[in-house]
Amino acid sequence: MRIIAVIGGIAAAVVFFFAVIFALAASVQATATRLATSGILFIIGLAIIVGVYYVTRKPKTVIQRLEVSGRMSAAQIRCPNCGGSINPREIKIVQGVPYVKCPYCGTTFEVVEEPKW
Image (cartoon, rainbow, N blue to C red; front, side, top):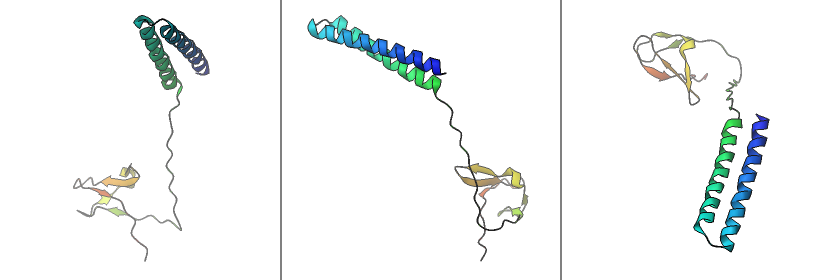
């Protein structure tokens, strides 16, 4: 992956160099062809940089950790609608909130911890 970034950087630098040369040549002797060529080379240079970025980027890993205060004890989870027993393995985390779907009545509800006091 590193060699792709180096080759892409060199190619983008060469293309940008020629884009600047064509832009300077267009300013000395005004021709639309040189200015258009400069613009096209500039766009190609940007495309090379963006392409190298997408090829060499690494995927991000998201790690969620649960921190609890005090002792933990297992409690049975019951559906608030029908009172059916819920398997804790069925809990899904959606945007940081634990949700579970009751296998008996189909109700989806948020799993909340009851206060201890």
